[in-house]
Image (cartoon, rainbow, N blue to C red; front, side, top):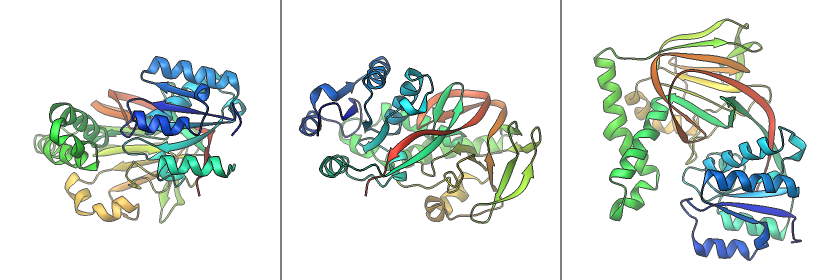
Length: 333
């Protein structure tokens, strides 16, 4: 592979990243084309250099957070000029790897070796959701983000030593859910401390999703999509939430909209139907799905918020807007 043909952007904090892995990557990519980042500042500087050098392809070594941060930093460095942003190859060195699930990425080093041996430009172009100036392929409020917050707390408190391998897998999320998130949600329900959400359509017409993805009821600009209590709210253009969990099965069906999923179901009912929920085949009157271009979400009390698998903090009001054709992703065969 010629020097400068593609770059690698490696997250030094990624779950599977190690000196041995870096050495193997260096056998396939020239060292000058490898950007090894341990902080947001290093990542932003690397993205700027990647744009300035004009690499046609960049591989990310990390999870969803690594890819999302790189895409945002490249978008900023390129001034939103899509043609200046290289094709992104997602190497699944992270924990959940939701975005990698869209392009059939498996073993990261195998994917990279396969591409080097037989370069191709089989790509899929994806849009993203934008909120507060940040692009992301999936995000959520309520129990969705609370699980992530509890997982981080549990991992910091218990996920070390002999327990560390458990908390670096999906088992850590289940531990956080059953140990902290679900009991808290039940307590809030019993004491009447449920948060009320109000969702207003701001953009073009939104549509209620029916069946297996067909547009149903239309909502004009300014109309109310939903108001009431909720368990979680998810939005995105990526169907997956990591570990192959297809919680937004309609997210990538339209190029002009993102999926918004409002969940009223209790955590207990979600767990009871976890199999079809995981596969994206579960349907329920308390699952409300919409195709949207822009919405305002207002909450009666602060709720945890995550985007791209990274916890942002508590929010009471957010605007979500669809941005089409943000980046091309390599599709590994």
